[in-house]
Image (cartoon, rainbow, N blue to C red; front, side, top):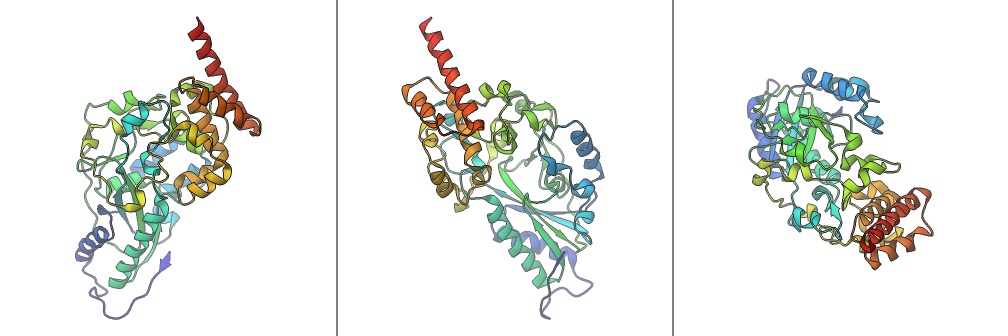
Length: 368
């Protein structure tokens, strides 16, 4: 763990008023832009068996990182020796943007998951978490590490234990106050802070998220088969998108928010005041044809600092090709597909050819 030392003007002695410090941490977290913070212990026994079953069923697909660390994901003290508590934080990201429903309803537009419209959340949250950890060290020296979706951490299970919400049937964390459109981050610390009580689940008999999933990826309440999930198919999958799912992607080119958009609790979604999460380059209302015209240089320059950058130009183009195959059969669509086909990689070429076949089928149907 990262050890931090501080001066002698310390309001907390070695015995430490840890309850008071825990309250201070929550105030400091809000001052740094987090919506809420909570503290949990490191016992994730209740979640470990579920993770093991999920991995055994192969639901992780190509995400080998989900199992390569063994039990460290569900045992924080093994990942970071000395960890006694986890401080979980959340930060809303829902931006002021073209409504998700409007974009999904227009097959000529490209739908990008709302969390990815702005700058990379990893950098934004990590910087704030580091400042929070430093602030804690200034009050009481501690050893710690900060994480933002960057290590084998069961962030939903930890945030659930810390009282920030409950795990919804779509497997994401839900809050009665703000829904689910927020990021999570953690500080693993050796401080024996008092823990916060978890909150009760409030999903009840609702199954809106399950019914709304375009590909049926939520195979049962609280169980998501990543191999069917559009977020996995457009972001994590490095190979060809399976034929059966291509028509179901619609115009979704990076991620999917359907299960969250229909959730009743998201009527309480709080619009983010964080400027870093505001849409960039018009991605909240961009035309598929325009994005497919981007060169690799355009992609690199415009997606620098975006979470989209990590999938690379080839997969970005692959996703767009599928969406264009699902778009109305217009001259501009066919022209841009044919233009890109010549210099396309084998992976991209296969998806472009599929898209052109969809438009051939549309034209034949129209002729009939």
